Image 1 (tube, rainbow, N blue to C red):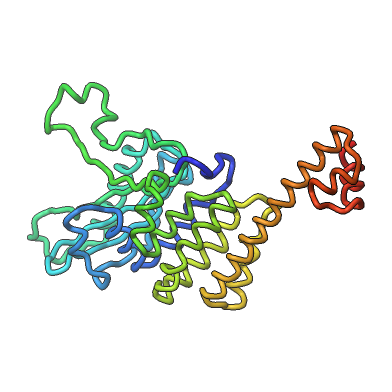
Image 2 (spheres, rainbow, N blue to C red; image 1 turned 90 degrees about the horizontal axis):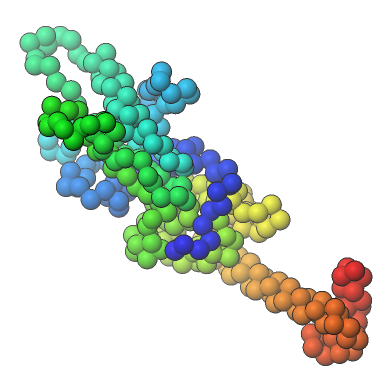
Length: 314
């Protein structure tokens, strides 16, 4: 899976794209159930999930604000907790500290909005589960536990503050793992790894069955994401996929049409590749001083094409 990774200089609008996707409660739960191997995940019911629209801005970090915060009630239990999902495309070594500040801001928000009529109730705070969704190419090297940031922390015991966040590292999942999920978020992760057009086409074809089976609302979100985000990673001179998806979005074609068009584009790419290979052979033969008839015999090009290559070779 190390080949055809996203280039480091690609300006990928990661935060806004994943924020758009995970604003769907269905996709948020799909994310949890697909990648968070915790017992409590199975107790979460979609009807008991509510996105918190409040903006949590950190004074210590200029223009930094929490990406996604959900309030969740565990099914059948009177336990309310908050999911803080932080979106990253670069490694942030201060992440545990940043997440601590976000958690404090969320608790402040909870306390400000708490019902004060029951003054006899014991003071308590809701659980907050921090999670980082990272799609950068480089390995995530930031500390996972807050305590690991504390110099000399190994000399102390439970008296020190500590927590560990959940890390979802998009680039580290294998193609086999993501295809096996057969769902929307797995498809997103798989295509998010891909900046190469040929690989993108190949993976889209592998995902056709999954795309067809997506619920209509999730399929719409997926196609919008695909047209606006993935296609933008392709080189400026290689926009076939972007154009195709935009046309599909505008014309409302179904996924059967998508597959046919993908196959046509792939075939076109194969043919273009063969043509370029023959041109390379012809140019090498021209450089060796062979005449047109011999080059025609070797490549099948007409003399007019060979003359054109001669003129561009010198």
